[in-house]
Image (tube, rainbow, N blue to C red; front, side, top):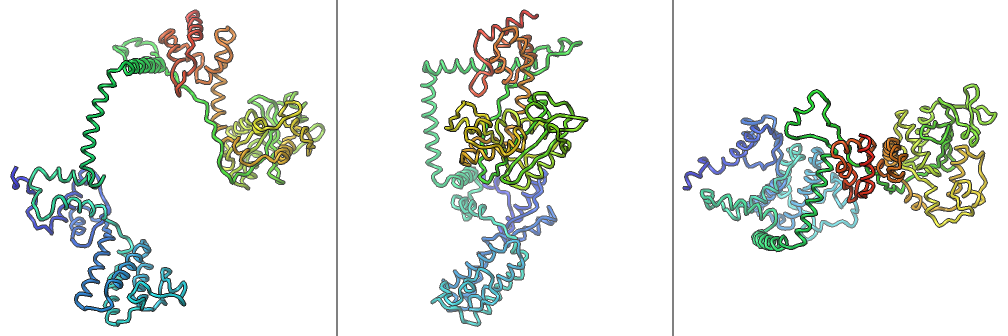
Amino acid sequence: MTAGKKKNWDGSAKAMEPDMIVGMLKDLEKDHIHPHELVMDDDSTTISRARKECEQSITKFSDRNHLKKTFSNKLYDLQRFKKYQQLRGKTMTHLKKYFSYVLAQNQKKPEELKKSLLCIIPHMYGDHLACPSWCKYKRNPASYLPRNLPYSRYLTCPELKKDLEAIIQTYAQQADKLSDLGSTQACESFNHIVASKNPKSLFLSGSESTSFIIAAAVAQKNIGKSYIQEVEKAVEKMDRKRNLQKIRQSSAEYKKRRCQIRKSSSQDQGCKEVREGKTYETSVGLEKMDEEQDINSIPSATVEPERIPLRNTDSTFVYFDLETTGLGSSAEILEIGAARGQDIFQKYIKPNGTISANATCVTGLHMKNHELYYRDQKLATTDLKSALQKFSEWLSDSNSNILVSHNGLRFDFPLFIQNIMSQNIVMNTCIAGFIDTLEVFKNSDLKTQTGSFSQESLMRDAGIQSLGVSHCALTDAMDLQNLVNFHNIPFNTLLSQSVMYDYVLQHLKFSSVKNDNLKSLDILVHGKVITEFMANKIAKSGLNMNYIKLAHTRNGEDGVKNLFEEIVNGKARVTKCKKIINSVSNYLSSQL
């Protein structure tokens, strides 16, 4: 192609930049992109044209590096025309350094920028009265010397001072504009690379080579001048890789592995189809038009929440206990007791239901005439929500609380969170996590006389007397605090056995789903189709009896097999044991 066909500009070179910017802005507008800011130098009328032809509200930011260059040029021009003896290399460097420093330190601060600019020249002439914090003279006036000036002496020429102040004054008057600068350094750097390959003095843009020159410039910008060797290495690497791949694909091991992958992929696909039911099949939309189609999905495997200990070294241990109407998950809280050093908390709660005889036998708490009593003593009570809110307020007095309880993970903590949720109270902001001291003592080297790690046995072995009535929540919390302090258990040891707040919350939900699944599997356990252990494993994976039936209905024994053998974290969802899969499938077939 000729150069004429490539030519796309007939104006002067100076008018090219404004025209290009306006053209690019218009192209962006076509794509509904409306830039509001331009970072550029002050050498053209581009911003005026952009506001006139594109966006009137567009803002211009001056280029920081170009501004410094302009300042330097003014100094060199002053020296060239006036021949000042004191305006030489060291002085020039010092002026440019101060100018750059003042600009950098006072962005978004126009008033401070103006004051700092006007202080530069007096500072170099030994007048430090108005100098800002960067002036080293103010730190130590006695020992200060202007070492960056010629012969470590202040400037003295009054004519030079007048000319320098005139230059600085022009910038100070534009402090509002100079306090909000941008940078085109990245663009200038790339333009320099392009110019080194496509000089402005040569008209290479008229040929097809321009696009390749620009591509080479981009490669050099991204990875440096070694891009040529990198391209050659990449080609050689691709050739070697292709040859090695041919050799590898012809080996028996590769073919065997490929068969395994296909088998695994087929199994995974079969499992997904069993879980999803019919989603896409020839004429499936015409089948069972008057009946409900099988569109129910079997959920993917559930995974038990991961237990991660807390790492906060600023935690506060709060020893905590509950007394309840019973031992089940539906038990109501009767008392909340907590101890944080000498600071204690205790609230009794009036239950809505009855207190079991076993609970009364242990705690001494019982209802009489609709009031809560401890043996013959009537207790002051409050409702559950008020008690929990008061406890939250008490906890808020310290930071990053960790509730510490004995056997808390099995009972106290889940029941506590369950009641918090039922009352719509948020406590994860004042409770970081939980520690079960039963686990702490079991994992320690401590040997007990009876082999029991109950709180009573541990206190008896340690010879610690209870601080009050046994099985009172506050007493038990205070006793546990004394027990832990007696054994001098290190802070990090306690923290290593901690769990996060969210872990208990997630585990509570996980356990609720698992228990519901277990109930549905009772028929298989009672019929000796599977063991209790296997039923527990099936329930933990997120499956219940209805889901297993659904899989069997869709694909018979293969449906149950695909469901049980689904790979989750590298292991079967339930089991790969053919005996168990056959037993479940045969039972379901017999029920048809």
